[in-house]
Image (cartoon, rainbow, N blue to C red; front, side, top):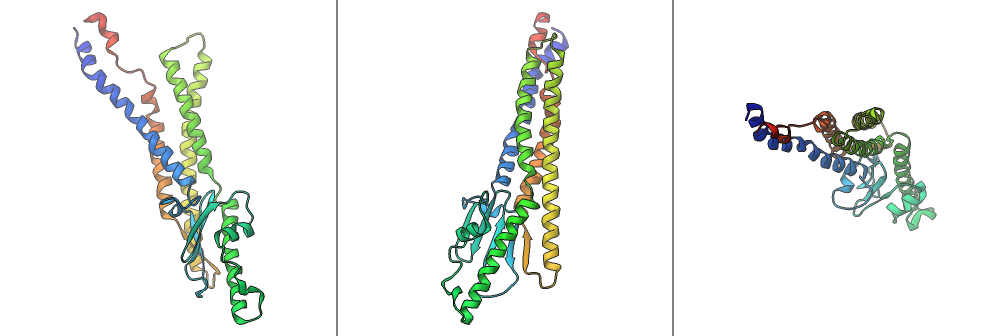
Length: 265
């Protein structure tokens, strides 16, 4: 038994387990991306706290006290000071979504001419403006690049599975097929990581800029606040995604096998 044979028998199992470690990164990548995309779509535990920005009126009136709108990639939440409601924003107009999120608006006194009726009408207009502004930001500013990154990551995993099979059962007569699978694996995973980075950076910078501009602008009608939790999730998703992508060469490398040295025992 040569030294190389002895080393293979000792270290091959440990090396095999070490090569499996990068696969554990898939779970947090999918989890963090899914949580980021599901922010504000329902009132399930912690989901309403996953928002890009929150909006509230700068008017300090009793009717608007505690009124706040939170915005996610595909959902929107509202807090009227006592109850929190969330829903998806797809396919709904500002009027319909406002009525769903704030069933107490418009109040019964909006059709009168008294001071209370005028105050209620003004409050209703502010609430609708909050929802309309949130929907505009969602459609025109905070485009869901992260969803595309998640799709590319799943496609990259499929290519990785095919690449592993191709390495285990090589077909020398089909070199072009092997090259396409390898390029597809690395291309999809690297592009996915790049898009996660783009989404995280764009969200952080844009939300921060909106928060600063609204607080620095005198008499701004709407004050915005960036959602830190969602930003952290996106940056963590990028970190794990990058680590997994960089570990792919290790996953696709032929490892040490004891079988190779059986003839020397």
